[in-house]
Picture 1: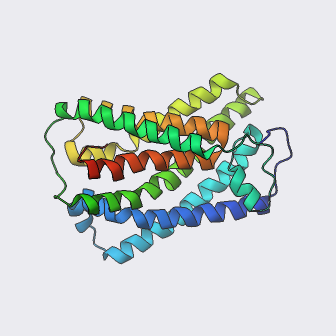
Picture 2: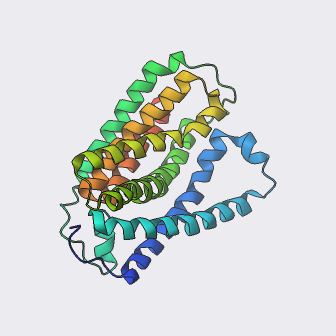
Picture 3: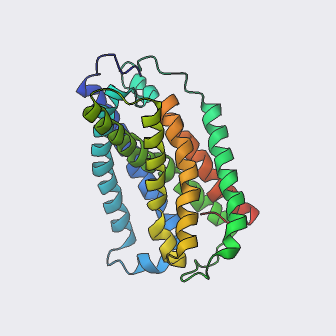
Length: 265
């Protein structure tokens, strides 16, 4: 998207936000088999039947991520950021964004997932004993749960961290400096959003191991690696390619890794 073109109408942005909100709600529902695998006791303590909990969380995701998506889309016009393929599908002008390059996104996401997986093989022997180890589960079932969870990472997390948060950082910088940030500004926003993406995984890590220094370092660094790749693709190729890369990385980490008997963050 060219930042110098006129901002598309609210109608197109609202339609896009609705599509993204629906996708996020479905992805949230699909996350629950993985959560039940990872932290069954914690979910069992919630005083709601599982179907009601899934429905409530999915509705919350629809409303919250729909609102964040709309804000991100509106802020992104000034910065040349957005979801060009979805915009075209919703009847808007993609604004001459670079070619989407899905193969590049899949390759970068997959390679980042492999790098993370290799790093876990080196780091994990140094981790403390698990406080709440997940119950044993067949590799095929774990891979299926991981596949469903990968949609949450590729959709919901990208809406939060890239479309909203990274865009917000750059929008604030543009407002303060009265001009669109240069490459350095984009690089800083990419890294900061990636670190915050890693920080978002700390509660799950704390549930498994507690939070000592190596757990925090592992969680922040390995997740930030994937986040940096997704942030660069969001900047250069559009939100859809960031989503595709994130999904590809998660396929490696949460589908292939269980089938191969390897660890993942």
